[in-house]
Image (cartoon, rainbow, N blue to C red; front, side):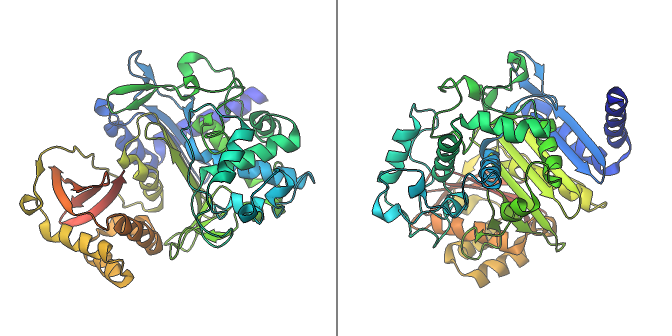
Length: 467
C-alpha cells in the first residue's frame, strides 16, 4: 500500500507538470533563467491537489551536481516560523505562556527590559536591534543574552515594530532552558518528525555531502553554510533559532501540509500563530504573527508568508491558504530578482492570461543621471519617494507602475517599502546610473544603497533595493 501511494503521488506530480498550463509556463520561465548560472535552485508549486516540483541549474558548479527538489539548501529567516511553532508547542504542553515576562527565564534583566514578554520577542516588538554580531562568531547562549541585554532598546516594548534576529535567538535560549535539550533536538522531536520531515535541521539529518548545496556570491564559491564556524550542535547564537536551518522544498511542503491539520499545533495555537499581532511598520498594511508575515491580497484573500536569505542563499515560502496555492522556492545563488520569483509563479496560477517573465539586470554602462534614459520617469520616482508624502507616492504608483507590478503586492505594501527607501535616501543625491537593456541601477553619493528599476514599455515593472 505504501508503494502504491508513493506511485500515485509521483504520477500526480508528473501529470501536473505535463498537463497544467500554469506549471508549463513556470517551468519554461525557470528553464530560461537557469541558463548561464542566472538561476539555480528548486521550486515547488502546489495548486488544488496538483504538485509541480523541479530543480534547475547546479547545486555545485565545480562538480556540476544538478539542483533537484531533494537538494538541501539554507532557508534563512524562514527558520523563525519554526521557532514560533516551538514556543506555541511548549505553551500547549503547559511549559510556558506567551505572555510570560522574560524575567521568568533570564536573570539580571535590566530595568528597561523587564517588561518584555515572549509575545514581544515573537512579534519583533521588544525593541531589540536587528543583530548584535556576526552570524558565525563563536558565542554561547549566556554571553549572547548578556550582550543583548546590554544594548539600549530602540523603543519601549510593545510600542513599535522592528525586525530583530536578536529576539528570536532569545526565544531559542528559552526553548533550551525549558526543555533541557538543544534547540534542534526539540524541533526534531516535536515538529519535524511528526510532520515526516527527515531532511530538515542543523546537524541531526545525516545528509550526503553532495546533497547539500554550495552557495555562490556572483561567480565566487561561498561554500556550504553548515561548514562555516558552527558549534557541534548547530550555529552559534547570533544565528541559532533566527536563521540557518537547512531543508528542501519537499520537506517544507510537508510542513505546510502538517499545518493544515491539528496534529502538531492545535487550532487555538494556530490562531495565535497566524494572528495579525502587529503591523510591520506604520501604514504597512501587512502584519506579523509568530514567525509569519500576514498580507492581504488584491483578491480579498490572505497570504501567509516568510522569506529569508544571507545574500548567498535565499528561500521564499508563500502560502495562499484561502486559495489553496503554495509556492516554495530555494536558491544557492541569490540576486535581487529572485525576491519576486515566487510571486510571479503564484500569479501564473491566479491569472491564466499572465505570461511570466523576469528581466535580469547587468549593472554595467555607468553614466551621469542627465545622460540616462527614462529621465522623467526616474525623476518622478525619486521625487515621490523622497518626499515621504503618501499621496504623492500613490499618485506616482498610479501613473508610473506597470499594471502587473502594481498588482503583485497590495498598495499598502508598495507604500511601506517606498516610504522606507525614501527615508534611507535622505541626505544622499543621485550620483550615477547604470543601464543595461531594460534595467536601470541608481547609485547615490555617500551611500551603499542601490535601487534597481526595471522599465518595460516606459513603465516601472519591478524594483529591487541592494544595500
